Image (cartoon, rainbow, N blue to C red; front, side):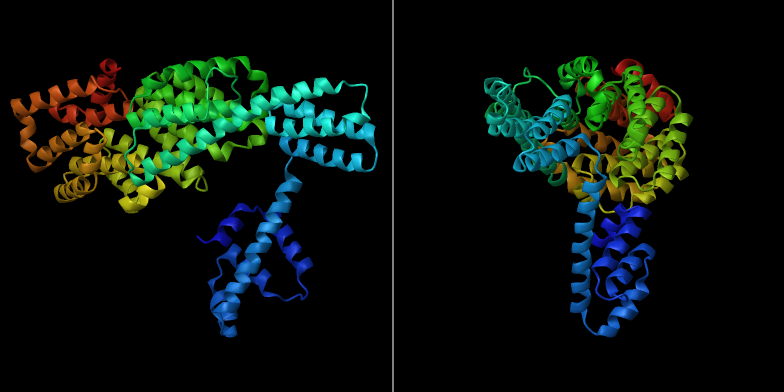
Amino acid sequence: MNALEEISNMMNEADKKAFIHYLSKKNKRKDVANIKLFNSLKTDDINFINNDLKDKKSTDAYHALRKRLYDNMIDFMANRSFENDTSQENVILRFIVVSRLFFEHKLIKTAFKCLAKAEEIALSIEHFSLLNEIYLIQIQFAHFNLSEPVEEIIQKFKANKKKAEYEEHLNLGYAILRRELAAIYHEGRIVDFQALIKNTIETHGISLKQGLTFKSLYQILFIANEYASINNNFSLIQPFVVKSYRFISKKIDLSDRHLYYHIYILYFLANFYFRNGQFTKSLHYLDLMSAELQKQSGKYYQRFCLRYFLLLAFNENYLGNSQKAIEIAEKALSSNKKADPNDSNDIRLMLVVFYIQQNAGRNALKEMAKLNHTDSWYEKKMGMDWTIKKSLVEILLHSQQENTELALSRLRSFKRRYKKYLLTVNEERVVHYLLFVEQYVLKPEIIQTEKFQKTIEDFIISAQNGPKDILIMSFLSWLVAKVRRKTVYETTLNLLETYF
């Protein structure tokens, strides 16, 4: 998909009609190519390019036309966004702009009233950078308002400046850690992330004892959640979760003003409790998340709905409601085809796991076939950890379906690509796990020998003594099921009782 199509897909029908009107007003002739090109994007009309443009015998003319249309689309969307933006930040900005205009025309009383309204809104949403601008303007024109002591405004400015500076430091630290996480996930970079977090916090003077906002809590929880995921140990971030719960409990009156961050925080909490096997608590936060997704006319529903359904299906599955979990996942995929592809990939892989657990091999193969990009592509788009899990699931699926050659082919490919990386990041247990799977695929009867069974049982015990994560437990359950000659799903639920 090219840039023109991507922007076009962002537009609803009203936007598209308005954009054509915008182009018509700018065009000096009625029959022009830019509107034709835009309409071809809406209808995927390849004939426009093949016929109308090739007649010009100039690819340069075509690319120039694309460039002009691209620039016009950006200008239009920028203006459209500003016109339609009813967010509180935009309201504050409008008050600030108009207050300056009133000051220039000596409408002093009205100007200060606008600033007062802007300050009230900015305080309510804890927008420190805009408050900084408001206080500077109030100080600049304080000589027009002798009834309010300038010292009080300066005091407010200084107090707010400290909060703004802390937020800036946190933003810098967050940006550095996000960038490093991207390298870990998408390039397989080997990093001592715990040391990096510690160094970043010290370098940028970040203190978790300072006052939190919804945004800063989101940033901290994001890093904590990713750190736990890298280490496959969500118990590491228990203190952050406890603090988060206290924070949102005290500031529930502000939650609607920070809806985006509030939804994300609830998602992080639900994910934490799910990964630790505390399904009832996870469902509690998912219920809260569901309620928030309906607010402000469902403003953030499309952004978060697949993440919500992912965790909902996971929880139901491990509570013993496997059919309900599968129905949730299937409906989520069929009803939200325009959602984030990464979220769709998460749900599809989860659905494959559910089908494997229910021994529904045909359904699992059908869904796995839709994850048809290369490992390299998934590493860049979904991350190294996700791609490794996807490859492992694929190996187990082919093993379960007795597709021996395919299973062995994927096993060899996996070892070539990931063995060295896994050993470097101290994930020897994945390498050992794969060795047992390979032995089983090559010689299925080995599962009946007492020696192999004892080796597997000992491996499971040692794995359970390490970091706890329900997704790791799911892989272990598949192997245990073969040894104990039980269904994968039954084994999974039984193992859950002792795993956590």
